[in-house]
Image (tube, rainbow, N blue to C red):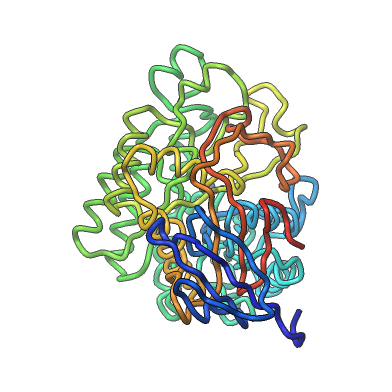
Length: 434
Ligand SMILES: [Zn+2]
């Protein structure tokens, strides 16, 4: 579309953050005007009566699988799924094949995202070469590349070596980077399959203790404080982790954290079915953990929601529990799950959802053009959402190449009706616009 004159859009009667209805005139990629009764000859009209307008969602934690596992997902299919879920930017995790541990791979993923055009793709760089945990990857070269990498993570694996973690935290200070840790003490989780607790005892699968997560988070908060750097904690799943992060924040340390939609809604009781669709890393925990995570997201101890969208082809999931892959898809259901877990339960209003799913993840990911208010002059990254809709989740309708959603068959509120990326619709009438 570059070079061509861009279509203006007049969005009529949308309710920013579920507040009073207004028209939004979108021209040249920005929100040019807001107010009621706007007119714009030549603009495309979109009737948004009854729809809630939110800033385009930002995901800090997406597995797009390309390069290397294009049978599970590609940048094109994963970003199509993201747009359908209301996202205008996703951070693509580094555990691809080859691993995103050089400027070259980071730029490749970034370019694939631009070519697909469904949403912005911001590559996450690996912390260690090949995710091997033995020496640092080319952090500076990735930061200086066209992809301007600022978030680094070995996600899927924990940077368990304290010296390497310290060096990584020190290194990224030079360019205001952040280390996103997958907190899993490897020795404490050898062979672990499900949350260690009552359910693991009953069903006889190896337990995954909460302390394996909490010990790493505590260590890393102390390391981040010691070197004065920025730590982001991926997919917090336990009540104890929340307490540690709350303590670290009370000290003024530069610690942020995310929670997944599935950890806000589901518990380890589902593992009793032995259905591997519920197998995920970190594992589903107890209702007490879910309650603590919801409260922490509501009070800001946990900064944001991140999907950990982890697509797998059927042959990797349709196996005995122990042989099946860890992970769940999430991009196309995230906003609806947060609606059910946080808004319907009274924990967050829509301003809160916009903060936790757009503004804060954009700030943590250093994306200046995302996460901005629905206001005159902001980049026109917008999602229009029907909060009154309800429907049963049908993975056959998803754009993701993979079908491993734990929400299949579940009735959820809401429907993404339209998504705009820099003023261009990526989704209209709940379907891909391009
Ligand atoms: Zn992870």
